[in-house]
Each structure stands twice: as structure tokens, then as C-alpha cells.
Length: 203
Image (cartoon, rainbow, N blue to C red; front, top):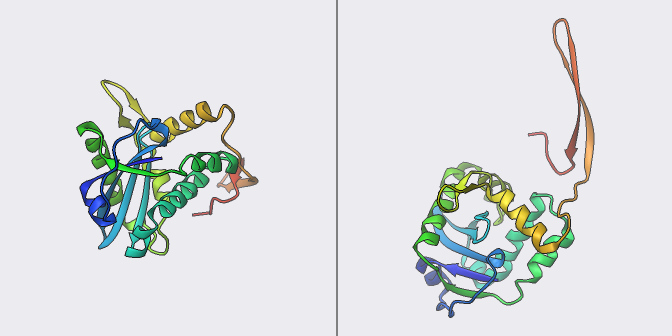
């Protein structure tokens, strides 16, 4: 996997950019480092789908094992999307060799900056107990974004299409429970049967 980093992130990592590669966009990410709520926050944006992954509260020790930290955040977020475990592990296995290069072009930097806005927007929802922010990343990736002249996408839907095309089969698997929900009104009773993924909480 290729990580195209901003100068600020390179300074934090204390490494120099590697020569750019011709990585498939699905396995290529832009990355930037921010300070949100006085904590170091890392924003990843997938080059193909514009999907956003946010990590919050990084410390010096985390930057020393940044590959592991990023991969775990990707795992956590794809799991939050209910993507099959086998698909997630196959996707992550493509990241055995990490390269850290400079940002590609001005357009990519502009898109990355817009992705970073989500970290500020969701500041009060960031979990200070964990680095990965899968719930926030999932929500942030549902906003419509521009992808060229008069072309707009939802990053989550674009990611689903990319993964299905790459893996060649269905990517979702959900364990669910069926709830019978009844509303008692004055003169009527209304009910619905709803299938809900098991990991979703009542809030």
C-alpha cells in the first residue's frame, strides 16, 4: 500500500519520502496529521473512493509503529461497515509492503483537506479511549463529494463497488436479530418487523 503524506506528517514520522509508485488507487491513500481537541489526529483518504478513516489521540509510540496502527484502523472501519472478514484480511494483506511518498498533485491535496474537515466536524464524537474511530469514519464517508466535472459520489458506495470489483464476489455478511416493534397510539396499533445487525446498539 502507498501512503502519500503531507510534510507535517513526514516531520512527525521523521522519515523521508520514497519515490512515487504506480499503486492501484484502491490500495493508495493520502494522509494528513491534524490537531483536534489538543490531540494528534490522523486522517486517511482512499485515492479511489475518497473513503475517510480517522485516528485520534496518537502518541509518539504510535508513530513508531504507524504501519500497524493504520492497518488496524482500516480493519476496524471495514468491520464497522459489515464487510466480510475474509475480504478485509485479503485487502489488508495487500499492505505487506508500505511505501510513504509525497502527495501526488494539487487536486489530491484539496480533496484531502476536505476530508480533514470531517475530523473537526465530528470532534465531540471522537472516542478518546481508542485510536481507531470506525463509527465516525463510517459516518464521514457518507457525505457526497465531487469526483470531477459534474460527477458526484458517496465514498462508502464507491468503496463497496471497488471492493466487489476487485474481489469478484459479494463483500457483505451480517449477523442480525429480528425485532418486533409496536407503537401504541390512541386509537391504533402500528407494528413493524425490523432486521438489525447484531453489533448495532440501541443508541
